[in-house]
Length: 382
Image (cartoon, rainbow, N blue to C red; front, side, top):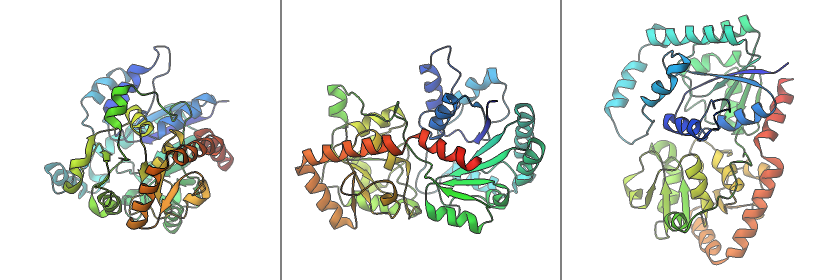
């Protein structure tokens, strides 16, 4: 009998999902997630094993399936910016009202329970950053369906989680994290079982060196490539400082969000999903700096860059040695002087860069695909 998995998530890149649908063959089941979200690759791995899947978009009002494309089209893509904005003020005021007192939240919780009763999931996969689904809803869902509740997040519960997520921690049968230290925090909040896989991995169909036209190669070419988020500063100041230390190199930054003013001269544009794959495929050096809140390491870029065949320099995090071998698969740096020295050396030794990038790619294919992650998760769920 097919395993039935119900994802509960927020749709962050609505236009990317529409583009994913447009690119699919007409006979293929409609993708649940855009390729810019990590859940897309778990979805692919699960479908290949015959799972039956569904998604509940907690940041969308209840919408009939035939009207979902129109509803998604009206969504605004999320964009983080520094400083105070009207949107932040409105969100702050709304969030001051307890979730269970908000009619829209109550409606979405009722819609989730209705969908779960119809779908009858074996596993409910709750993606982090939940501000909508109440603990009492999750308790009811577990009681009525007998499902296993999996909570998966790549961020720190101390910094990013919301009160209703922390209150529900004892209900999570399994918490999956990228960063080992985040797992310790979830245990302190009452989660009975936590595993650091990490969640992030590669899909060989997508995360592979991309063929580039001469125009693309020229557009993306630079000494140091960075793709990611840089605001707000209190969460990403270490990234910004590392990039600031390299501004006298040919530095290229791609971000869908705002960037600090001092780095805007190096902003090349946005890169999500397939475009991000192409940007990293063109990289001479892919710089990966973890967020301030990720002290153990293991973000998505660490694995994606390896799968795409990019030579990678990363900040020194203890978890990296659990998944890759510094000096063989990538280079790590200790401080900005060391970073500059590593960049200078790598630029002068292209053969070593290429050899290390290929070693990282083969290692990721052998040990860090989403199929490997799903193997581990299936063992844990048993």
